[in-house]
Image 1 (cartoon, rainbow, N blue to C red):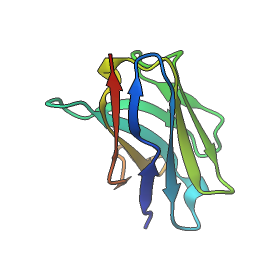
Image 2 (image 1 turned 180 degrees about the vertical axis):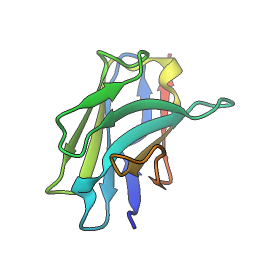
Image 3 (image 1 turned 90 degrees about the vertical axis):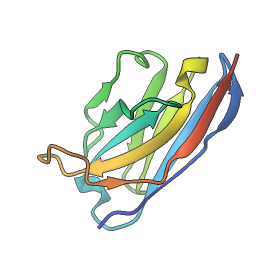
Image 4 (image 1 turned 45 degrees about the vertical axis):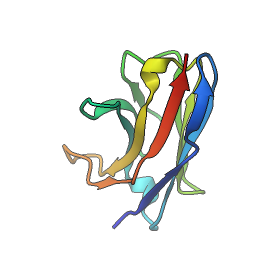
Length: 119
């Protein structure tokens, strides 16, 4: 079992930055691939970024490449999403999620944190 709690969301002007954090419970955090997803208002949830269990591999949606950076600190059981040059279209509820490396789907999800980017 892994429990995930996101924090760091808020209201920011376009061009600004935010850093989201996701704290995980459990002793096996380092075994999990971690991901960030988002759900814009009135739209379906979409992939944002992911990071391998070791942090050696990262993956990004085209819409955030060059602006967002995912990282993790396994000693602190925490994954981060640094978001720079935010745009109004980044407005969404952001979720972190965890899955074992060979699972096809993410098994555990946080409750989400709201990010609002004003123009």
